[in-house]
Length: 246
Length: 246
View 1 (cartoon, one colour):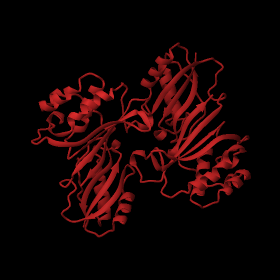
View 2 (tube, one colour; view 1 turned 135 degrees about the horizontal axis):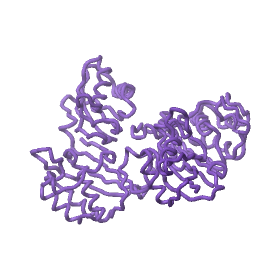
View 3 (cartoon, one colour; view 1 turned 180 degrees about the vertical axis):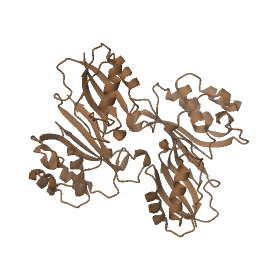
View 4 (cartoon, each protein chain N blue to C red; view 1 turned 120 degrees about the horizontal axis):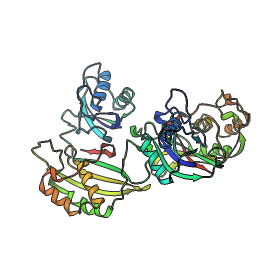
């Protein structure tokens, strides 16, 4: 029996989604909980994609196969009672055996949250505290260059030798939080994102917002396909995987 | 030189505000940071009052005397760079030597945050996850009995033998979060609160909201001055000291 799960996690205490030897990961916690439910037989979890150390998820997805038969409702409850408090199953759906949580993704939505107001220690691991004034209008001019289909090689981590870096960004938006106008939320939606791509795009946008570079420079860097032309990677605590669509 | 500080803290990792031998407290961290600034001479911090283990503050206040002279701005900066990331100085104000952060309090405001919607692991230490439906109208009927000047003996922790439990609650309010109507915020404002009083009032209000007791029962319990008539203490993670007025 194949199941799709939609789940959220607090990435602060984890070394990212994907299992790594001797490190605490979301995948390992999920597989540990599933093994208990699946009559102690190992279960392999296939997520929509990985997230890096410290990155959060409000709507990550994954699929797996169970040897037992269990209702959607009971599976949600059994998983949540076996998972640590920083991982939570929102929804479970029975699927055909040809469903694939990674290959069938239509789009993913990421959000990056910045706070330019007074630092709030409650949010220390959940927003990027940014103690500079940002020119949002300049950032809006820059952000439009990311929209569409591009080779995003200039926004991939340097040590990654990826064959195909062509991705389509369907929507990109920068807005102030409705409840607190000193908070800025940057939203990216697209058919897929490369490793560190969102955080590298945010890092460059912050340079634009600080007026260190012109918005048009973003276009130039994107077209250069050269990572060394780009700037800093924005820290993980501000990044959320918000939604995966099929 | 006497200074008043307004500060916020993430209470999750602390055993409350007040210094206790061998335990991690907010007061100890503040005094450690102040000692470094004050030419290595010990500084005694006097807060508006203590908060318990796990309780957060968005606007706690305290005063202390320094042997050195330092501008308000530099003191804020020096303190923040010497404090851990879960304590933050919002404001520093020079005061006359007769100012007292505890004795001169006019009112304090506390808020208690409940989430009745899907659990969000990002908020695990910052709201009380409450998986029952609450009848807000019933709670509104109950909450009005807290308003005014009463002997709150029935809402004090049982092992506390307090002489004077008379306090005045000037404002009490229950409302849904403007951004998320599955979140409920209960606000209490008054001239002072006894230990566990807010969490005990919230605990009883939750019984009303769950329709386990009638709103009128709150009046009866309050008038009984008997702690044993009351119910459970709501957990610390939902409680915030929001503001202290002088």
